[in-house]
Amino acid sequence: MKVLVINCGSSSLKFQLIDSVSEQCLAKGLCERIGIEGSMITYAPAGGEKEKKVTPMPDHTEAIRLVLEALTNPVTGVVKSLVEIGAVGHRVVHGGEKFAASVVIDDEVMAAVEECNDLAPLHNPANLIGINACRKLMPSTPMVGVFDTAFHQTMPEEAYLYGLPYEYYKKYKIRRYGFHGTSHSYVSKRAAEVLGKKYEDLKIIVCHLGNGASVSAVKNGKCVDTSMGLTPLEGLIMGTRSGDMDPAIIEFLAHKEGKNIDEIMNVLNKKSGVLGLSDNLSSDFRDLEDGYHKNNDNAVRTLKTFSYRVAKYIGAYAAAMNGVDVICFTAGVGENAPLVRTFVCEYLGYLGVKLDQEANGKRGEDIAITTSDSTTTVMVIPTNEELAIARETVRLVSQA
Ligand code: AMP
Image (cartoon, rainbow, N blue to C red; front, side, top):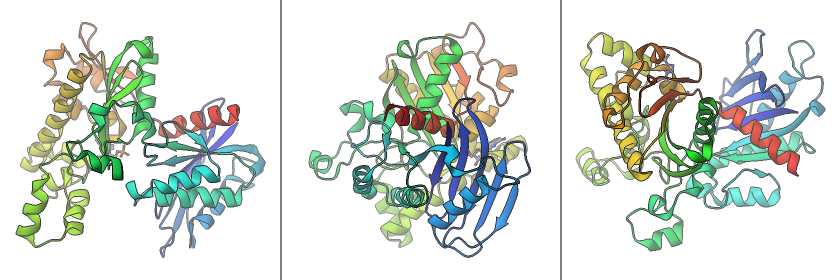
């Protein structure tokens, strides 16, 4: 079956067409500036030339129409007609407590996702718009929703509750949800597969380090804790997000800088993280690594602080699981920044971690980066959220 995977944001839309048998990506691309002047679609068939076209996209329905047109283009397309697309898998950011697994989308599911909008006001409405646009243009194609939060729904109460009045949990469902669940699930399963061990027998810590970053603890095949919370702001220091901090800083800063809550939240989401910590050097780890090699103080401080926070979470999750067998690095930074992996692993001597620097220098493969006598195995597992969504989509559509 050919599965169209859609990841829809408020003004952008990423897509991939995946053959579920070969698990190969047949074509992928991106629509940008939807609803804004200068909208543009990028389309790349596998093994073909990437094309970019500036064209009006007043709304998401037009963006999806253009995606379908590109996929069926007689010259550069990869399918003859839309009938060849057996299903569509949609990434949905927040499923709240309602969705502990992926679902086939119907009107009832749409209404339930809408009820989660409150919890992810920037993401969920955009996801719904994308789904609606697809349903309009492909009314007889089955659609599946795959939630970023679903994998973390197995967390026990002690991991997901905050030390706040319990009535806020009862009234507003304020609790830890966690994100990047599709990636944490894919990477932890893949690690077990590569090691030839049973997923259910392992204690795994996954460090998803990208522009957004989170760590999860996966014990016997189930997530037992994760670093992101009610929103993706909690936890690690990220590209531009602060991660954990004393909540009293919000009031302190508001008074000192004369800012309101919205302005402070904007600082915490967009101007903090490695960007802020590096005194605006960059949010991109390529620049930070480059700066580190040139002894730039801002880069050195930032990489050390970022890595320390990752190591602290690994320690916390090793404690939460009463041990750890495998630690995985994934996503843009986790897969491509050997320096960050080295810094993190320097803290892990107590887990018997012995890094193999040659393996740590490799890129783009599922690989153990510790020596054979390392007590805990550290791995790099490139994530593939689109493939994970496609697999989920096929699984659900085949059951329906
Ligand atoms: P993601 O959100 O997973 O796409 O990760 C994006 C981030 O990965 C970028 O902002 C970079 O900081 C980082 N990144 C990508 N490529 C490299 C690289 N070759 N070396 C270091 N960091 C990288």
